[in-house]
Image (tube, rainbow, N blue to C red; front, side, top):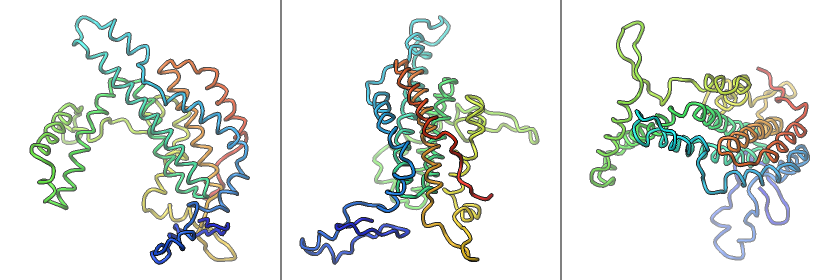
Length: 328
């Protein structure tokens, strides 16, 4: 936390001003002028100068890719013109259109994820950044998978109705009176949409009891299997990209052990995680290049040379960099 005059603090949580400080306008000058640790921000800048010099170029290309009017990819337009006679009118085109929108917005969210990674890592919060890397990786892999398997996009989209109903049911379980606030017919409409989506989900037969098994998720393919299907190199990176963040996002002993270290014969807790922060930015940068390559190619944006320059710069920035030395 940085206050007027340059004082900084580095506590486990933000040191918010007390109510007493805000009682009069004369005391308002004691409020912080920035949130975070100035010391950690300075350290991050010093340690990651090559990346920070490249970031404006990366950010400029990201804006070109995402701040635009969404135009369908060529193959989606072709689906309208080359529809087979036996196909239901508009089905192929609508599937391609739906896929395009999902691929676009998953990429857009991944770009937001990268910004969040930088905010956390820039303040020495590497373990927190790992949690965001996890979600970013999932979005990128899912977008790549749907790009190659557009027929799965409808199941992905329709899963929203089931998720919405599950979310609402949990609210109503804990707060029964909430149903009256929904408005007439809202719950019934959500239930109807969820039932229709659930009925379309694929079934398989249990090898033991020989009864039908309806899948719970929008796909039976696991995330690591998706990664392997779209690019084996992404599957190899599944542990640092996804599993590390999972360990930090959930309560488990392994996650605790990641944050401990031995000093002077005693166990200490890592207040900051600079090495992890640097590696999280490395991982996020890697995924950002994947996002830009995918969006440029899928939507035929014509940024091939710019994307290649950013990919080449990535190699130059992180040449020789690896994961932090953390004992397993």
